[in-house]
Amino acid sequence: MRKILRYTVAIIFLIALTGCGDKLAGDIKVEWEADKRSYKAVVKDDDGTARVQLVCQYVGKAPEEPVDTVIRRNWQTQDTDFYHYKLVNLTDKPIELMNVSFRLKEGKGEKIYDTKGQTAIDSDWGAHIIPPGESLSRRNSWVYGIREENVLHKIYTAKTEGVAFKIDTQLVYNQQK
Image 1: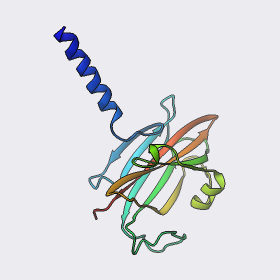
Image 2: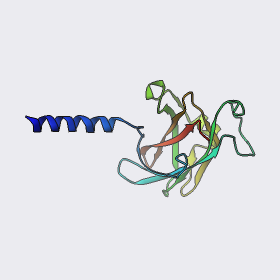
Image 3: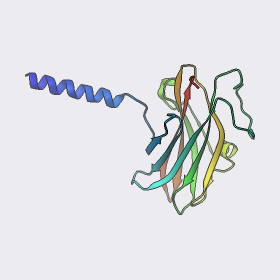
């Protein structure tokens, strides 16, 4: 009877552990840098084929000059974190970004709260197609939070060769400098 109780407690503990933490969309392996904000990641499709390298670099509490897009937040008076990131096509076929969904690690029920299509992607990136072996870059992307820290997930649905996959871009907000 004690053995069964121990196994039951162990199973409940493991279930609780797997339920904790931030969920990632798709098959992505992230390697964080020491600042715990910048990272490199490789995104694979469901078959395990590497499709995209995601490179995300923390810029700081202010955008990097020159600012070539409108920033719809007063970052000078409201705490904001800025990032540059790029998506590198690792294949020999074009990759099409179909849409982008937004989810917070904490808040809004930890569920997708908005999705935008290719028109918005074109506006943000200048294109929604990543040519073979090339990349698309996004400068001064920003995130803020009402708590001390949070993570904004920008989850891109991409497609190549008839195969769809997710690219989960994580922008970490932290009140600390």
